[in-house]
Image (cartoon, rainbow, N blue to C red; front, side, top):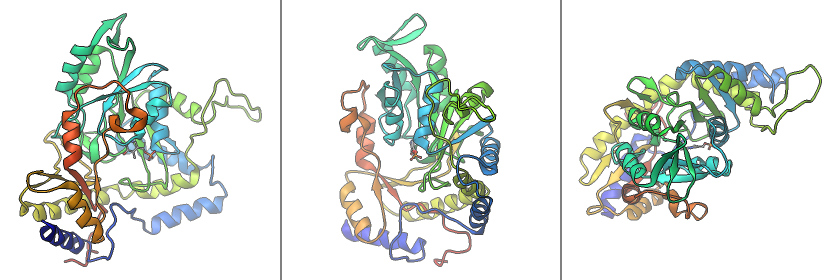
Amino acid sequence: MTKQWQEITHNIKAIYGNKDIVLLHEPTFSETEIEYVTDCIRTGWVSSVGKYVDEFEKRLAEYTGVKRAVAVVNGTAALHIALKIAGVQANDEVFMPALTFIATANAVSYLQALPHFVDVTEQTMGIDPVKLEEHIREIGEINNGHLINKWTGRIIRAIVPMHTFGHPVDIDALIDICKRYNLVLVEDAAESLGSYYKGKHTGGFGLVGALSFNGNKIMTTGGGGAILTNDEQLADYAKYITTTAKIPHRWEYRHDEIGFNYRMPNINAALGCAQIEKMNDFLTEKRQLTQKYQTLFEQIDGVDLFIEPTFGTSNYWLQTIILDLDKHNRDDVLDVLNKNGTMARPIWTPMDELIPYMDCPKGDLSVTYELNKRVINIPSTPIRVGKSTHE
Ligand SMILES: *Cc1c(COP(=O)(O)O)cnc(C)c1O
């Protein structure tokens, strides 16, 4: 087994032009980033005011096909505010996949609400709508128009689907559940900029959605995020509450509720304006990389590449392999890959196994546990077209 994975490591390195260390995901910059950021510094407006924030928000809304985008300091902050303006309150429960990055659960906790973990499908690694419905039938009852968790007495307010590694979940089935059980849909689209469900961009299906532009995401603003919505009033409120809830005035400091200082600085937005111009290139390059990995892993018994569902188009943000445990052991594979300078990581620890979230309500999570033992992310930096020394 070791020998086989040493050879695979060698082949991955070859895809990346035989670099000594191949990282999981590096940002890709060019002259445009330097130009816009330099311009931003020259104007002196690097922080809370400036033309790049407005421009970036405009381009984001255009790109994702929503009415409005509000740029904020990071994806977690975007989720926090998205949930807040969607009406999540203290002591509510919020459905989310147990297989996600911890930010999804943290954002719910910031509102003194509780994550309620549900299982995922092997096909999308996102929420399993069929299993969710079964779980709701078992634990839920409608009371005063609210879905109540019979076991805890709490209101279940919302569902937060997450598009794992860029692969869209079956969102229509979740929208249907939301309608029937009076739940609000808040999309965690942090990983899925450039991903589409039935031809429509992810992040715009729910009442509110959240994006992340962290350094390891498909495009970056250094740190950053955005709130997406088709509701103008909610967008205005999101803008207001992420900019300290200040009532506009020429000089007075008047704030009529407790706001947040979550606004994206202008200098980060300058970087974002340059990066979003490259999204099409990134998507093409990601797909080319997927093809290379497909050729590589087709020949390996017991390893499947994670491929987009038929109903959607993935941005292939993180390249992912799924192991057959009869033939490969996850930690042995991780050991060989990392030891030889090819960075690889397992999928997240299920949320209910983490100390802060052990006591949260949850459904049956058997697929989550199974995938946790089988899924590995491998190097995913887009290879610049024409720049690969491999060919
Ligand atoms: C990256 C990510 C976030 C949070 O983004 P930050 O910008 O790092 O705060 C939220 N949810 C998921 C699923 C993510 O992958």
